[in-house]
Amino acid sequence: MNWASNSVKTWGHTFKTHGAGAKNTKALTDRARSTNNQQGQWLDNDAAAEFLKGLHIEGAGPRSVRIPDGLGQVIMPDGSIVQARAATIIPSPNGLYKTGFPIIGPN
Image 1 (cartoon, rainbow, N blue to C red):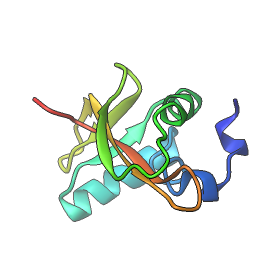
Image 2 (image 1 turned 90 degrees about the vertical axis):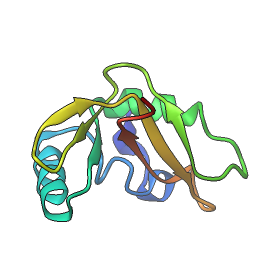
Image 3 (image 1 turned 135 degrees about the vertical axis):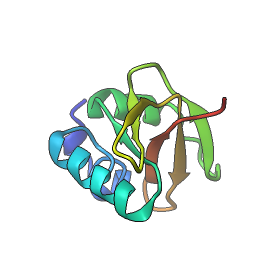
């Protein structure tokens, strides 16, 4: 499955904003610094799309889920990067997700 063939309608800003790649890493690093909020980033868009498709439940609300090691990272306000252990997913009434992004997860 090629994640890029999926529309923004399907994925919201899951990959447009939080997807893999140096351009997104730079933008998320700048956002983390300027907002003082952690920013999650997927490290492999295809793998993340396959994983997220398997979690879609019609009518489910926003929730946090555990993710496989190496699927995401979190950029901290100081610019450091830590491995993500979970993701927040927010379903969309018009597609699969409004957004989905990695988070540090529970301790």
